[in-house]
Image (cartoon, rainbow, N blue to C red; front, side):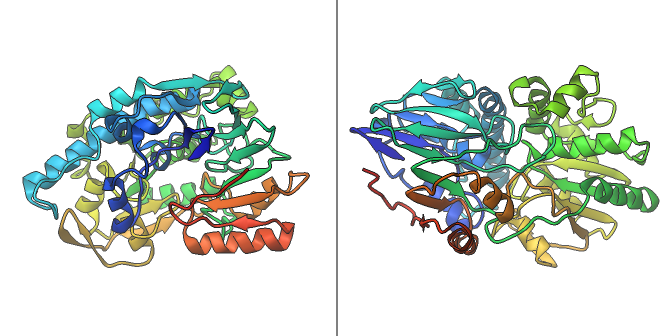
Length: 442
C-alpha cells in the first residue's frame, strides 16, 4: 500500500496460500478500512495477487481497480470460478462434517466475484493513468502470465517506485519476455526462487518420456496445474510433440472450467503474444488445438475420470493440490502404483503438493487419511517465475542502484539468499519487510 498526500493506493489484493497459519490470515480483519482505499492496481491475475478482491469489495471498497486487458479477461474467468469452488468446498465439508468449524463458509461467493468485476478498469501496456494523491503510473510487460505487468509509479517529485508483481522468464513460450528496466528510485521485487536455479532439462523430452511410459504401462497421469499460464505451456509442448509425430495416442483431458476459459483468452489477447506465437496463429497453427485435447465441461464427466482405466492424462487445478478437481482425482487414485502425479510448478510450504514431493506416504484429504502409493514426478524447469540468476540478469539492466530494493513474495530462506546475492553481485541496499511494516520514502 502506498499513501500519497492522504490517499491510499493498494498494489495487488491476493489471498494467502500455503500453510494453515497463512490461509487463516484471509479471515482476519483487513489492515485498513477497505472504504478508505482510493485505488487498487493489479499486476496480474494469479490468486495470490487478486483472490482477495471480491472480499475487499464486499467489505466496502468502491474505487477503481486498474489492470491490463489480459488481467481483466483472466479476472473474469478466475474470480467467479474461485467463488464457485469455495462454495462447493464449503458444501462438501458441511455435508460430510469434515470441517474444523461448525459451519464451513467460503471466503467469497461467485456473486461477490461478479460484483467486484464491476470496478475493473483496463489499461493498455505503457498507457499513462493518473492516480489519487497526485501520482501517475503505467503498466509494462512482466513476462509472467497473460496480462502480467510491472506498475511503474511516478510521484509528484519525479521519483518513481517500480512495483514488480511477479517476474517472468526469458524465452518462455506464448507471451512476451519481461521488459528490461534501467532505473527506479525504489524497487519492489519478488523472491520466490531467490535461493534456487531452475533445472536445465528439456520440458518437451520429459513429457515425451512420461507419455511413452504411460502408453506402454497403461498409467494414469495426474497433472496438478495452475489454470492460468502453466496449463497453456503444457499444451504448447504437447502440441510440439504432436507436430513432430512423437505424441503417443493417449487421451488428454483439461479438467478445469477456469483453465478452459483461460486457454481461449491466451489465443485471443494479441497484445501479450511474442513473435513466435503471432507467427503460429497467422499460419493457423494454434498450440491450443481442440483436436489434441478434450476440455472437460461438467462435473459428471470429471467424476467419470475417477473410474476410467489408463492410459490417460488429466491436467487439472489447483497447481499445489490445495483444492479444485485434481484433489478428487488424486484421492481416487493415490493408492494405485500405476498412477503418476506429475508436478509442473512451485509447491509452497504446507501444501499437499509439497508433502508429496517430500515423500509423504500418507496424507490427509477432506479430514481422512489417504495412503499414497502413486508415483511422484516433477518437471523442474517449467516455471513462470525467474530463478535467482534470471532475476540478477534482469536487475543487471539497471544503470544505477535504486535507493532501496524491497524483497517480498517468497519464503524467508529464499529472501535471505536473494538479499545476499544482490549485495554481493550488485552492492545494492535491500530490505526484507516484516508483515505490516511501513517505510517513509520522502
